[in-house]
Image 1 (cartoon, one colour):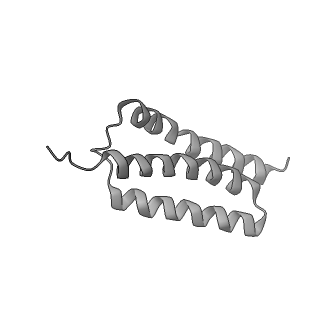
Image 2: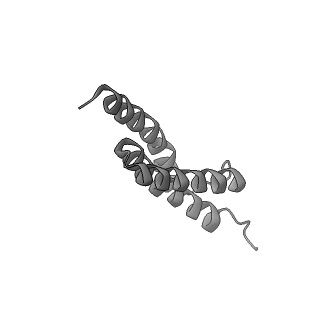
Length: 89
C-alpha cells in the first residue's frame, strides 16, 4: 500500500469512526432535539457528493469512508425527521 493510500484510509477511519458514538446514542435514546435538520440535511448531501466524487476518481479511501458515513448520517437524518416532530397532544 502506498503512503498516500495509508494516510487516506487512516483519515477515513478516524472521521467515519467519529460518527459512531453520535449514531449509537441517537439510536439508543431517539433523542434528536440537539440535531439541526438543516445542518444534517446539508451534511448528508455533501457526503453523498463526496461519495460520487470518490467513485469518479476511483479513490477507495474516499469511497469507503463516505459510504459508511452516508449510511450513518442518513440514519440519523431519518430519525430526526421521524422523532424530531413535536407531539400533537
